[in-house]
Each structure stands twice: as structure tokens, then as C-alpha cells.
Amino acid sequence: MHILRIRNVGKNYTYVWPPPEGSETFDYFVEYDAIAEDDQHIVRAGFCKRHAYGKNRMRVVIWIDGYPHAEFVGADDFDRSGEVLSEIKIPGDRGERSCRYPNEPIPARYAMFNVEGMPTRVKGPRVRRVWAVIASIADHKTLIILAALRRLERTRRSTRAPTQT
Image (cartoon, rainbow, N blue to C red; front, side, top):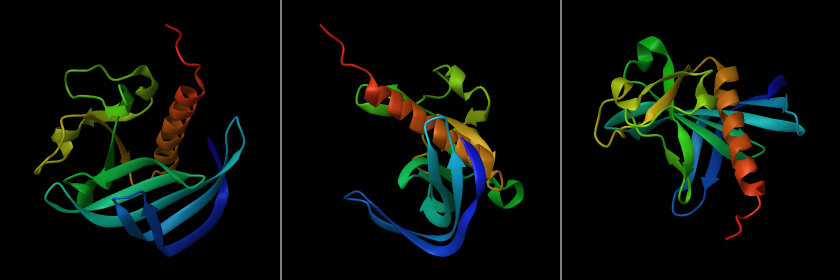
């Protein structure tokens, strides 16, 4: 996916998650026109702070055509590094699941990203032992590429013919 231009920049974007989640307001957002092999798309990056893993952390969500494809959480050292993490997703029995750190190999499609174990960068209650993509909050290109990769994987899975038994 390639970013063509900035479409809009704003404050206080509210997204309504499916029940039981409710709504969430993002302090700031940047919206882009983008193009991929299949068509043109509208990509939105939303930024806010939210309580996660025992403290208020930066949160970033990337939507493509109104659907959230990637979520990021601020690292423990976010104030110094500006880095956010997103769990690596792999096919599971019921849709996607997180790739377990350190037991499972990182899928080859993630080779272009900086990857570390989530617990090496985030400490706190309920931190999951998973592999995570790490990116600078200022690197919107990388944030969007991860969302586009996830969108592509979901599209491929949904268009596959059912297996005959």
C-alpha cells in the first residue's frame, strides 16, 4: 500500500467498537489517500492514551476503509523512544491469534519489520508473551504497511474455498 497524500487531519475522532467494547475517542487523527494493487483506499491513523498493562500508554489504531486492521501500544520507554508495539497475528482455529514469544517462529511475512518479544518492551499486569512489531509513532508508513499486511491476510483467508473432506 502506498500513501498518495494527506486527506485530512483532525482532533477527537470517535470510533464505535462492536459490542461489548463501546466507543473510544482518539485525541488526534491523520487520514490518507492510499493505493494498493486492488484499489484506492482511505487510511486513518488515530492517536490517544489509554490505560493498558498497569499505566496510561500511547495507543495507535490504523483503519483501512473504516475497518481497524492494526492496534499499537506504547513501549515502557515511549516518552524517550517514541516506539509503539503491535502483536504479530497468525491464523488460528477461530480466525487470528497472537504469535507466541519465544516458542513460535516469526512468520516470514514479518521479516521487513523490527520485531521483539512484547515482554521485553512492556512490563505490567497481563502482558502477553507474544512477538510484536515495533515502530516509531512518527513512522506512519510502517504503521500503515502492517495494517495493509493484515488486511491482505484477512482478504486471502476469506476468499479461500472451503476444504473438501
